[in-house]
Length: 320
Image (tube, rainbow, N blue to C red; front, side, top):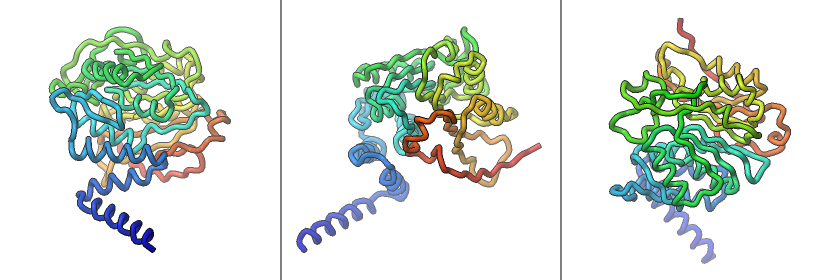
């Protein structure tokens, strides 16, 4: 009886503490509670969310923050909060591998939050990372070194369908911008950056290819297919930037490329209703090789994007 009263009291205290938070924080805490991950990892995510993100307990002078026990150098707090939401709360990069040491290629690493995520779930993974923005790359290099992340190779290069120099357009007042792009539409000012072909960097099977390259994803996939290197990739998580150039509609081209390459896919994205013409939209695409039997035997990714037995209703609007 005493034990029951004690448990009831503890539950009431937790509810009371939760009710002190504003509705948006309570909503995020509920999202964390619903994650299908280990309880200790869930607790670490919750503590980081409340202490670092909500209460803003970080070193604003030296731009350092504690993220799940890792010391993370950041460019801007707003970008850090967005990355934490996408990667650790939404679990955008969750995937299943039949290996303890999957080979992961991370295209568009920014400050390395995605690499931390991969290393938490697959400590023995080998990671090849690309980040062309100079301030973000400096943070990425520092975060890999200070957290002693092993088997991680980082490259300060943009990815494109040809080798050479490109202009990387970025926000002049936001170092480490998450929207730095080789597409001029984003910004009017930029700097020279070296571009390489991803296909030239792949010489063995890739367990996960993550692509978030702010509008260059079509060119990167085009290069992979032309070189025949897409056949070495088991799974992809691609952030497609629909209407980064408002007059261009190319989602079907990318999806057709995936289909022709033997990939199935799931799509996640919401433009909001009612529809508006030429609205920019981030679309997350999870692609998987259909003939890979090892993936069928594993559990589906613990994200809103699941591979097997999922049926999606997609609302579209077409404008002439």
